[in-house]
Length: 260
Image (cartoon, rainbow, N blue to C red):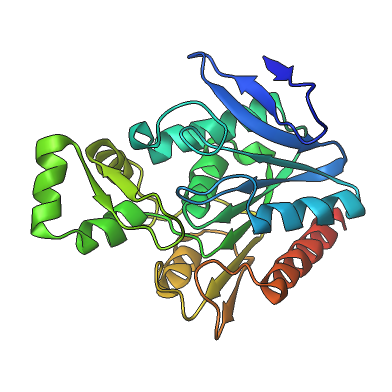
């Protein structure tokens, strides 16, 4: 069930899941296709990209949904207990219980992996996908290689390791369960049976997720309508004003294509 918090027009709503956890979200009514923004690892629904897309959708008249995955932002749960499967299930709950009709999923970084997993679980609800520095399989392809031998030992002995985060004061808490669950939910090892239009935006100066990841994703998607935009001087966040303009232009073009 969903409950509204009446204090202040910017307060989120909450979806209560079957296990009793509450997931915070903001939903704007509008026409379909609707748009759902999926945030990155240790980010939240109040980031610049999510808010820029929300403002764009409000002006255009399309429904828009942003939410905090378990262990992020205002939602229940501890980050260290989270997994990519859990965060994808949060998305599916939002698709099933909040969003209405066909949706375009926009996945930022970790949200790009969430986007693929969730689309595979609800393919009949997905009208299109947009990945922004999408990071499918990052636990296996990036974290497992980046961790030192001592850090791997810590993961095995205490169940997690903390590593510095370039985007805030709090470290990334990389848990054994996150790494193991990631290995169980890899998507780049076989064809991805999604036949919707997909747009991928990736910076060539992304120090966190190699731009080649976009090429791997394009190759594995079965859709014939996949376009990659590489940004020569783009970083991982792609949050500058010109980056946000590019994102909303990409979304606008995709919406027009789907609507026609």
